[in-house]
Length: 424
Ligand code: EPU
Image (cartoon, rainbow, N blue to C red; front, side, top):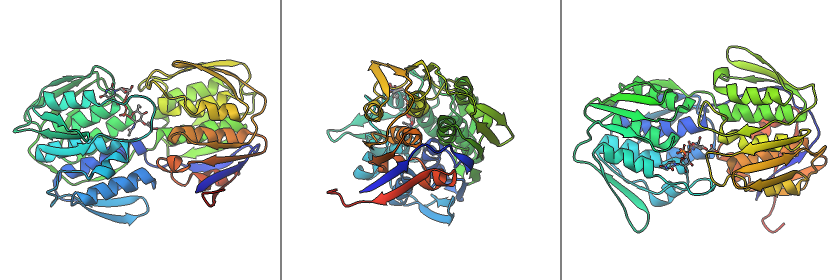
């Protein structure tokens, strides 16, 4: 079993370079299946386990995946014929649902099991299904929870999202790029990765306008082709390092970021006592003042991202005063709180609200990641804590953070990954 061991109490100092965005690349890779001519060369791909699984799924469908270097890949989808994602593969990550939209767009026929992924309450895909149906597909879910999507012809339509959904917005785009005529997605999600995937599809020959606003218009085209593209920087990876620097009272240059995408995170960190200098594609962040409380409410972009909620709660657990955190995207994203309480945090959860009373010090102990961002929160807590923190279930963390131990070490943290026999 792999574990992360941290000896806390060291302010982080130095610089860290941010990778391409996980939640963008897990949509871009299935989108590459839509290229019927030429190859897609995608740069700035993060080295994370969710991406490795995506490559395996692409290969199982007949695409040729060639690593050009550590962060650049070439995908040749010209000769694929398969439209069934192997059951165990689709169950292993949430984003496998993007193969439904991409394969439906390419073949008018797709078969993908209901996705797995991190568990924070019910994660329905009704808005995805509603979008496919609006574009002319028939959807049947069988007893094994495999979704079968078929269409004689895809026809552009108006899709109104009842909830703002990142996944459903991307899936609707993936299918609509090949539907005849105009599709209008109303109440669309506006995250940077929506814009990134729309830009990628446009580079492949699609005609998408309005990505980044709540109305996206797509004129279908007959064929898409390969292109060269670089993935947008990961706002959540950046936010995680920024929160860690502020929590430990350090100073660091966060490189390869898009500052505009970090506005809500920066605003909250400044409220807590951080100082930030913005440059074109980097940020210098530090905290010399005392760490103070603030209230945080998660919302779809441009609101404060739910994927930063656990890391922020970890930071607030050592900020003076009482902070109120409201989770308004997921119905059960506080499972990690128990772990922070084991480290001495004072947090009470009532439904979607966590009340955090800052303590002077957390103390290191043995804890376990309950999901990806929960794992990142435990690292931040461990970096602030007195003594040694041992984090188990780190496979969750490796789904979405490239070289996290190496990056924190380079910032001066006393952190290591160790392999321990399962019975210890
Ligand atoms: N929802 C529905 N019906 C749907 C789809 C979503 O009711 O058909 C609800 C969800 O239950 C949730 C809300 O809408 O309450 C938002 O869900 P969304 O569809 O936006 O989430 P997602 O696409 O499944 C992506 C990220 C998550 C991130 C959310 C919100 C990926 C693979 N996952 O999930 O990322 O929390 O958007 O920004 O892109 C993470 O990176 O740690 C992570 C969990």
